[in-house]
Every structure is written in C-alpha cells, then in structure tokens.
Length: 506
Image (tube, rainbow, N blue to C red; front, top):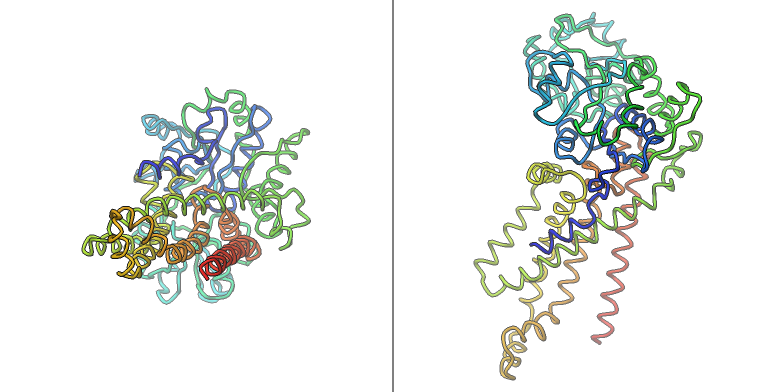
C-alpha cells in the first residue's frame, strides 16, 4: 500500500507544494467562477508566478475544507454563509466578531467587495400574480405548489429547514442543481426555486422574487475568506487585492453574471473587462482551470470542444486514469493471487471490493477528503483506484480458476515450486482474463474520472462542472465527448492487444 500511496502522491498539485503560488478557489456557480478570476487577475501583476485558480470545487463544505487544509489560500465567500453555515451561529455576525471566531482556525474574512448576494425564493411572475403571491407568507398558503431547491440550500443551516420552520411551510421540496433549476421553472416543471439575488436569469425569465416578510434571510455581503499567512506570504499581491474593497456593486455583479450565463462569455474575459473598466491598465492573464477562452465572440460548440484547454484536460484525464489503473493493478493482481487458494478469504476480499463499487462516487470523494484533509489529485486517484479494483481482481481470480488442473499437476511433477507454477504456468494462462479485467477497469476509470473536477483534480470533468454551473449543454457535451472518445480509443487498443495475443497463441 505504501507503493500505491507514493504513486498517487507524486502528481498531486504542484501548486499545493509551492509556497510562492497563490491558490484561489471558487464554488460551483457562475458568480464564484467570475470572482475567482477577478482575484487572480488583480494579484497576478504583483507576483513572480501567476496565481493558480482551482475553479468549481463544489459547495461550501468542500471549498472551506480545502481552505482549512491549505489546499487553497483564499476564496470569495459571503458573510451570512460564514456566520450561519461555517461558524454555525444562530444570528449573523459583524465582520469583527467573525474574525475573532475565525482566528483560532488560522483564517480571516476581509475586503468587502461591495455587494450583497442573498438567498431568496422566486416564482414565475405570471403565476405569482394569478395566485396573489408576493411574499413567503403568501407562498405557504399554497401547499400544492412544487418547490425545486438547490441541494446546498436544502441542507444548509441557514437554508430550507430553518426557513420552513420560521414560516411553517407545508411544502416538501425536491432537490435540483442550482443551474438546472432555472430550466425547470421556465418549463413549469417546478413552481418555486431558490435564487441568488444577483442571478442574471431572474429578470431574463421574468421571475418574481418573493418578499421575506419575516426577515429570515441574513445579508450575504461578498468578502474574501483567507488563510492568515497570506498577507505576509504575498504582501504586494495582498495590497492589490485590498484595492478591490467596495469595487463591485450589485448592478455590476448582475451584469457580469449575465455575460456568462446569457452571452456565453468566458469567466476570465468577464473579469478582465471588469478590471479594465476600473483601470487604464489591462490585467495580466492567469493560470487556471475553466473558462480560458479569450475571444467572447467565438464561444460556439466547436470553439468550446477544441478550446485551448483541451490539451491540458486530456493530459490530466489520462494521468488520472493511467495512475489509478496502475495502482489498482499493482494492488489488485497480487492480492487476487494471494487469496486465490483460500475460498473463504477470496469471497471476503472480492465481496469487499464489490461493496466499494456500490458507494456513490461523490460520497466516496467526500469521505476521502475528510480522511485525508486534502482536495485535488490524491483523493481522486484513490477513489478511481478503489473503483478499478473489482474487475481486475475478479478477472484475475477467474483466469486462475480456468487453468486446467492437468497443467498444474504436470508442472508439479517436473519439480516446480508453488511460486514457479504460479509464475510460469498459471499467470501466463490467466493473462487474457487479467487483460480483460484491466480493459473493463479502464472504461470505468475514464468515465468516473470526470468526477475529479468536483474537487479540483482536473480532467474533462472541468467542462462538465462548468456546464452544470452555467446550464450550458454545449459545454457539458464538450466535456463528455472527449471522455467518450478516450474510452473508445482504449477499447480499440485493448482489442488490438487481444488480437495480437490470439495470433501469437495460434
């Protein structure tokens, strides 16, 4: 296992080990992507190495865990979220009280960006007018209305559970991805959704924002949540970030969100244009993940599919897949050989490998992040390796079981030891079955590797995550198609290998 850990640790984000690289994270929704680029492009001219942007890391819990673990240095957050969700306080806190509570954790909150992006519930304006609904108190009088709420809002301390209790709401909502909820309400599949008050699609879809007449929702002023050592490590970059204080009002943020969601402009382009409007000097480009196109006029499907990030994403996806398969083979084949002569132990080990297959991939990642205290490549590789174990081990055991007993007896009669019989007779005979297992594991790994982007490990999943955040079907397809093509190429490669093996045997 030590060998496997060494293998999977090797490619872990270089940025995480480099003390001179500022690592900026973001959550998985449009505004957070844009703000991360604003922060990166603001700090880039004042650093020797460009900031690393880890986009779309997931919900609050994952991004905050990454900050605590040191996998990122800062990210844009909201005061209401910090006080009510992260610090688990019952009432909103001032920024001074917030920093007093964050300091023992090695964290701080500062640089209010100038706008409030609060939670609210919204419904189609025509339906709201027809039913006479203008407030949340009006909403709860219509229990038949179908609520589609984002997964995070459903579970937040400041989300639906407490809101339902405050208003005695009788509705039982269904969970939706935030980006998909707008399509659902536009198509009348749900009646009410949760929104961020700076979302661009509120006006675009003609939604009516319901008044919070019992004043449940706190203010969610945008700030930077950061590790306390960042100002000392990057003094010039931090001084530049300080100048962002109060520089983005709600109107500007809504306009930036609209450019991304309604016009398909890349996140880095939006950030660059916003900063250029505040200064005569154009900001320096940054390294990062999603949204690296520089021409907002060429954001059609083919531009997204063959974008400048394709080579990088392909390298990352291949590295994740190959190293996970290598680790699974190094662990699984010897383990299968060891348990093969022991039927009861074999059943237990294969059963455990099969049980791992039933764990949902995101749940597996969450458990690994919690256990390792890391996001990025390491937990993603371990998860992929665990999913690849079963087909490799099962096919190894099956192949060994199909070796004719006569060949074993003949080898023993020639004076071979058990180890020699295994190496020179049984494993060569079982090789086609083992390769078939690796073939199956490869297809599983290529498909499952797309989840790595949810924790900042890269690969084609970055496009899928971005497509979900923007509700952009073309971007989703631009991530899914290369993964499918890679799986087909792997199938062709294994078919060629098996054909050559059959010819050689004949």
